Amino acid sequence: MRSEGGSSTPMFTSARSLMVGQSSDDNGADPVIVRDEPIDVLPASASSVPQAPRRASNALNISKESMGHSMNTVARNRRCLDRNDADALQDLVADAGINLFGCCFVEVWALSENGALFERVSGGHWMDPAFAQSLPSDELIEMAWGLDREALSVPPGAGLVGTLAEEAGLDADKIHWRQIKSMLNDPFIQKDKDSRMKKLHQIGLGMVAVGTFSHFGTKGVVLYFSRIKADASKLRSKTNRQFLMLSTEFIGASYSIRKHRSEVAKVRRGEFNSAVDKVRANLLHKKSSTLASIISNKDNIDKIKLAQSSEDDAAYELYDFRPDKLSIRAGRWCYKRAKSFVRRVVNSRFKWRGSGLHGPPRASLRDSAFVFFGVFVVFLTLLKINLGIPDDFDFDAGWYASSLCIVWALTPAPVGQPRQIVAAHLWNMFVGRCVQYIPTGCFSEGCSAGDHLQDFVGWGQADTGGRGMPMIWKQALAVGLGISGQAYFGILHPPASGLSNAFAKYSGWDWATFVSVMMADVVVVTMSLLLLNLSESKQYPMYWLGMSW
Image 1 (cartoon, rainbow, N blue to C red):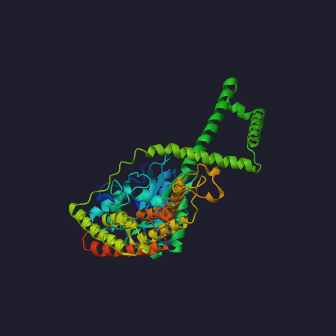
Image 2: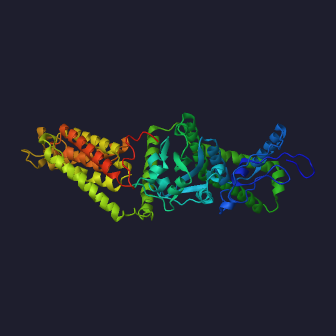
Image 3: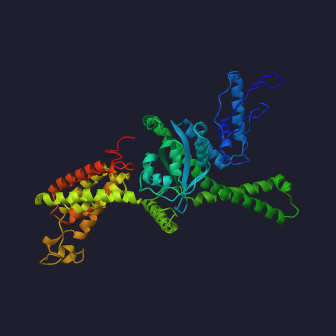
């Protein structure tokens, strides 16, 4: 870059200045980053938002030596700065976003100490300026920078952050992927107060990767957003995935250390104040002595060293460095678990008042009439089939009442898609059928027809042939296994849970009933597919196997 005098002066613009819209000094000197104001305070209007980095002019002639000198100077200046936690964290977040493939936006959210809210941490966000400035309208540009500038707290299990944290698991050591559009179409997901999920999709962000961290009681998530048209295979490549996991751990540790560093600093300040108090007391005790005389007196210095050495020995003996015995380790483990349990119980009361989110909207009269027609036709068909099939293949058509509610009234919901219906029915029938083989206990001599409904009361008086599991325990076991299995395999379909209870309770439902239920599944899916797609506002199914992005 040429100055007015005609001399050539090298100029270097740091990555931080590009991120926040700063430039180097007009005189061409190496820039020094000003940190008097928070880095994450962005302009409010689209005209003043940070601009994307511009390419240097071809006429700019910078030698390797001058560039290296400038970079070293800036690095030296940055190391000498008294940087706050927000700036240090934002550097890590920006580094992760810049180096990850396809990443346009990064956010760090932490769970509050009482466990009631997820809050975006100070300095825990970064948006690619090139992405924001490439949006087609000023309105979208302002929306993008608004999302980067502000974020409302959300409760666990609700909104974009709460839902993703629940799905990923705060203690999971893996990367969880989700499509924003599929979350928008899921009526079971409680949306954000500020429509944040919808706005993220409007500015062109389609995929989000979720990394979780948990360090000594501090838990949170790091969200990495990518464009809608980003290559999913490259996003989920081994190299990119490993960098995601390492960046999440690095960012999480940088945030988690804040609390513990402040505690250590507090201890050090206490020791320093204690030392100052000792010196002050010594000076007051010996009024004739001064600080200079104490330091210059060799005997006084030797006494101070001896006292310090005695204190160090006492502190060393205070801690037992021998290997802990098993009983001590077990006691500590029990203490930690009990303390964690008590903390969860105390924190749970903060969630009782709710989160003040909006309830789901109602359907229009036209949509409700369409739902009535479709459910009436499909359920009537199932009842006709139930009456016409042989007794050996009997089933209860009432099992499908709740399924039709989901398929027709909550059509985009993942729990109502064909894969969920078929797989969940198979799993719950299998669980219930297996539980049937557990003997049902009777608890008195000469068991009558109703004795199998008793609980474990009177177990000691039961005869040898009457020992077994009470029916209510078998039903609870079947339903528990049915629901937890659906959650584990990712095949949740709530109405199917009743099949595990029905099969466990009534031995008349056997393997032949499997065939009837599968046939009824085909009828429900086929008729719903043909009728629902006649509506302009509905599409069914949203997926078949759910294996693609």
